[in-house]
Image (tube, rainbow, N blue to C red; front, side, top):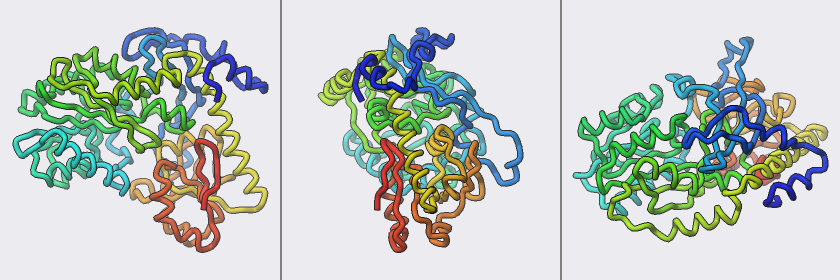
Length: 435
């Protein structure tokens, strides 16, 4: 990739991108600062809602698809999708994502809790609140440490699973009004945790003000989000889906938190989700010095060009190159008579399969460990979702790993694939075959 829009677009002689047309303002304004949005990062056409897997008895029903595009604000540099669907239409009672189904994610949560207890001196007199606590995957470790904790989760299924672990959970969306009511109930927190939720809220300003309302004067809030920089560097277009209303960089996040009276004082680079960032946030007036990690990350983002419109426009060429490489690989294997199946039914898989047009002509089925997904079909493309044991029964030549961010965990779980000479396909950043 050549950073700089003109050079990148001139290197696309096939004319796959019409920047003049695609960058025309569409009437949308920035969800943070209200500036009209005119920079297109990606336009993936129409796609179904990512976690809306289709039960077998609904296969004949019409499916709804919605525009899936990301634009960037030229003022505050927040990358964002349009408000196609309200949050409560996505995060419903039948929401199918349960964090505890990934052993890698459980280990990540345990390591975070151990770190937070030591770094911030949490004790039995402290209070921890997790926003978007899902099925209790993280708070269970806080409770085991003897620290009072409380969860907030908008979806009933995961919230009930957390309650079954003995955790106190409200089924609510975080807003400024709700945050104030929670603080009035005695839940001002020494630590607020919000993992992979900041990107999922349409009214991001109201959400952050809600976090500020429950934070003690010297308290800390941590936010883990997929890092826009890593998304672009890794060509991770499949992580764009309707659940993600925003895509965060440090330079955008600092403005966002500042508007709510908060300050980013440190950051961590994380390997999760293909490359994430953890923002450590406090009140502006808190006695916490800014750490050098901020300067390093800010400098890396500016060097890449996240403050330049042409950087975002140029990325559209990368998306097409990744799409074509995957399709060429799959087509070549199918022409050789090879059998291909998928592993996993993640949200990113819905974007990948639909944008690339990969249906049952390419992969016979996919598998998933989540009971809520087995027996269903991928929306849009109709690929069936089966139990992982089916791979051992049918012995395919290739397994396409859809949650590629967990490829090492999955390859370990499915090591038996190698017994019959099977191999794995990793779809991004460029499709490749691995043993």
